Length: 271
Image (cartoon, one colour):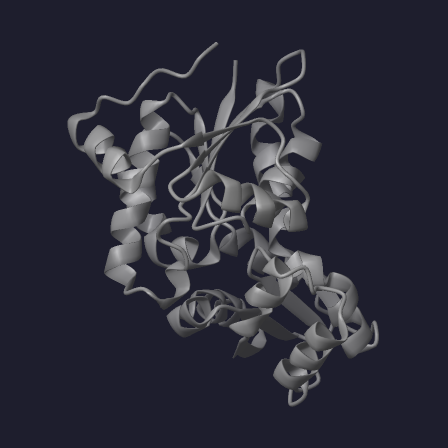
């Protein structure tokens, strides 16, 4: 039985989980939303690394065989550390997005939008420039709020997108460098006029992971368990905007997460 761990600072990573489940419907998934400490984007990098280590330790303690960091901020600052300490394969959402954009661009001019922390880290920009592309990057901090308030297709969201993209150069490809942004695809396409190829890092990541583990599929429908460090009702409410929650939701207070990780007394995953 193959179990895949997926984590994010909140609900945005559910877009990655959904993309993974569409491609790997027979695998089990454990999703952890660190909603008590969201957002990661405004926290110091060393703090995000600490959070990621705690969560990875918890999920690996549950027996996951693969780990997906469904958070652009954590992927930008903590992925290399997790690759060092985790006993299982680890994927982030940045490299798959960069690879997809590299294949999609025709002019070599690529844009990326994301949270302040993701853009400030330069993680996308460095990788894109390393393969010879010209890069324009813009932090769009208010777009997450628009999505979580259910306003992705609203006039307000379109005004925000126009504000953030109005001075973009002549790019032909744009990476949606935040897991909330796929919900804004229609709005962004209206603003760009359809002349810009949008790269969904959630879909790109799911493609990479599914190709890597396709041989590890099993028969039967896979199960999903969600752990949340904050209020479970609030998680469920906000998740409905992303597309809903499939599977059981379990509350995991941060103090308990830290204690379990420190003493390695993670409860076994029910079978």
